[in-house]
Amino acid sequence: MNSLLNLPVVTLLKKRITAVLTVGLTALACGAAQAAAPIAKIQEMLSKPPVLCGLFDQTKQLMGMKKPLLSNGRFCVVSGKGVLWKTLQPFPNTLRLKRDEIVQMQGDRVAMRLDAKQEPVVRMINSVMFSLLAGDLTQLDSLFEIDGSIQGKSWKVGLTARQPALAKAIGNLALTGGMYVKSVNINEASGDHTEIIFSALQSGANAMTVEEGAALD
Image (tube, rainbow, N blue to C red; front, side, top):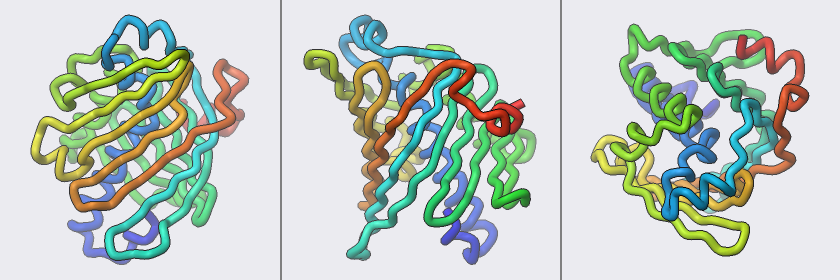
């Protein structure tokens, strides 16, 4: 996302919204998996704690580039409050998604703020996110065709965007996991591919640091 800072403002905003939507969907992918078939079994397998934090490693392969872009960091998902997505490498960057706004921080500086009153897409993004957190799959089902399978204690889920605009931005997603999501693969319509691996997952009030908790208050 930092590489976008030199783009014209309009293009930058569109690309940031796409990136935010991607983050929102992947960070909350554990909720999306509930819609896979067989629904009841996957719901039983998934743990749905009010607080979930962990580490992520992201590999993004861009069309026309030989070497992938690598990044890693930490995230927290708090039911009823939002998502904190903190990239540590290669550039420190924090994305905070709450009910009515999306804020990107670089250190103590606000690099971007999207408010639902000015940007209706923020309301759509957050509606999807909070629907996932609440287990309300109506919004999700209207946006994605969902397919899934279970083998032992693991599951796989595929999400294909129904709407042309969303399909152009996101393409399709493939998730794997068990009690929690283990990996997310995003195949964009442009040909770009992103893989995110989650690890060191912790749940409960002690999963968050004091600073992370304060950021979502």
